[in-house]
Amino acid sequence: MLTDGGVQAVPPAQEFSLDEIGFDFGAEDAPVKVVEFSDYGCGYCRRFHTEIFPTLMEEFVNAGVVRWKYVTYVSGMFPNGFPAAFAAECAGEQGLFAEVSRALYERQGDWKPLGEPYPVFESLVAEAGVDLDEFRACVQEERPRPRIRSGVISGARLGVRGTPSFLVAGRPLVGAQPVSVWRDIIEVAKNLPAAPEAGAEGDARR
Image 1 (spheres, helix red, strand yellow):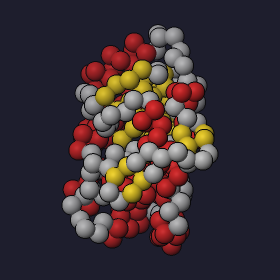
Image 2 (tube, helix red, strand yellow):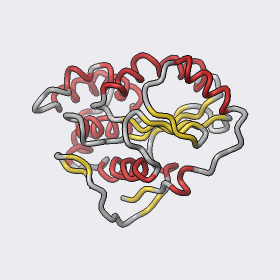
Image 3 (spheres, rainbow, N blue to C red):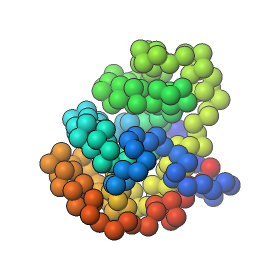
């Protein structure tokens, strides 16, 4: 379960696969599949999303080479990581996950040290075009909690120990690796045999 103090794994009730959580980018038939586990409070995740990911999107995702899945992951190690994940997931319910996710990383320094980050989140999501009344209802009803918890449990089952962590064609990669490393890895991954589906061993529960 998730609490304000961190993350604890407890036996939950309903099981479903990674295919049913997260946010997908790129063509479904892309030859390389990447699953990312990132925490909005993580400095290395911010570096990845502000300095590296835009290039990967342009060169590989938009070009139909990579199908990218972002899984919201809360490690419990970073201030306000949990409410930031709520903000992203609630924006995602309105089809604006990509815009808000990017803004959360770009403006991490604005909300991370705050005792009450939601005024910043509301400003940020409003700029992205989110309906604030619906956003507030989503947060108040804690609708993202099962999805976020599922991402944490999936990550734990797949061996995630730090963020950002990735599965590239089913194989682990850790850290904010530079674009040059990603280019090499993706080139190799295009010629690898398909690895077992992550969901088969990494099903999440909520």
